[in-house]
Length: 257
Image 1: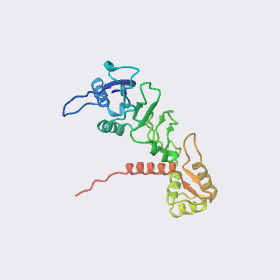
Image 2: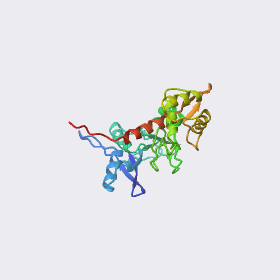
Image 3: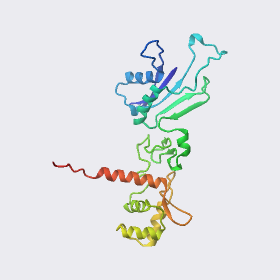
Image 4: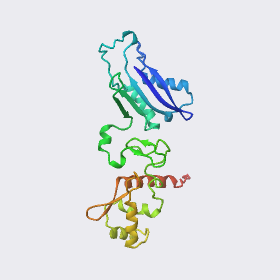
């Protein structure tokens, strides 16, 4: 079994080779994936998991047993074994876009690509706002269910990326968190909670802005058939991200015994 590990070192793409070693010992064999990782560590001692981008794996017949006319009963496409998968999952913790490439056969015509933290089933059932996305800032393509751009590290649901810098936008999102509301109901709710005071025309202007789509960025608010406004999945994710930032910025008071 051969493998090729894609790493980024000093701003350049590097590809490190690995091969499995089958030994008849209680300690077991060493797979091609883990060999490539060890080889990368030996070649670039200061490399970290985030710099490991992906790995390709292919089972090939032994050269001394090669015959193009013979079916060698290879196991391609060959997924990682349990031990290797644990290693790759650890890499995926630091680089969610880490990919695994396998091939249908030795022709390499059919490629199977998957990622460590999502499956085809998950991406098929995920909401459209959580699908694959191309970063508006750096044009880097990102895998489904990811929120951090692997190119420029921008957060997919941050206020700056979604053009939600005004505080009133998040006050509206928070007011809609309890369920769909018509514009007059939303206006009244915000006045009761002493948020922004605005007339119905101003409220509708804000809702229209929140309902706009910017390039490939989905709107944060949408209108139901009955005329009530509700949070989209993008709006819900943006509100979650906002709350995390607010919580992180709160000063921590040390308890005095």
